[in-house]
Image (tube, rainbow, N blue to C red; front, side, top):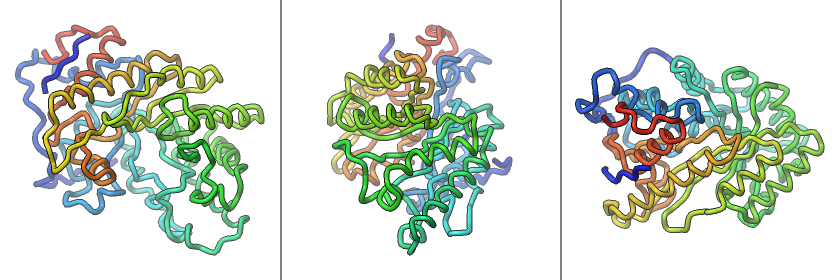
Length: 381
């Protein structure tokens, strides 16, 4: 397998000049006529799995000096449509965005993503329903009784999931409910703190009632390998399944850093959840690196990053039922990493000008190998 180190609603589109990554896509004159459209991750993947991306918007993007990426960056939007067979809302479906006031739901951005995906034949992953973070102040600072909170959560889940029934194929129902030691977040998660651990099962049941055909997932970071946190999920899933709770999947986010070693038991960890009858997925994949004082990534850093991306994909491909692999946005311009991890960055598979990193090529080659399209002349000519 080659390890190349060279270095996406409505039909209306606000073409905003000056967006940092709105540069034209790289020239493709070197490709045979009629084959350039196949030089994508989506084409390389074939039917092997759903290759996805988060749709940038909301969250830290609101404070940045560029317009909303999805509606304001034509080149970026085009890439979302061509490169991927699945989309996730990065922030647009989280509580503070979609349920900003007690009696108000804002579906404009999620509806646009869903419509775009439908127009491009893409799946959609819903993210997320029960989480300790990015909740609106009316919820976290309100004087609600337990019964009121329970009713609020049920209404939210059934309203949101019900709206997209038949449109969203997978939902991250419960997100990051354990800390790194494998303890439930009984203090910072308002739902678990005020309603007890049983609310987790209720959330899955309510989501299933709203859309019986959607696959319902647990989703978390630092659960790539077998450790205290993933062990906690493994034990909880067994208990919930024994109680007939409709849990269908387990997802590892895949936010890695080359500062740390690669979780070599990733496939083994996913396999044990698959052995319970669950679907598995990698849902928020990026690989950050240390770039103090705005340093430029070295070839060694880029090679290690590409290796981490490739090994995560290979681990997913090695497990039956790991049918969804989602990178957490692109390009580096829109990445959450520098905002969240000062001094780190370059975590996505595309540079700011939308050209490809070695990590992109590693994913493309691995997908093509798995789908039987390796060596096809459409791949980079």
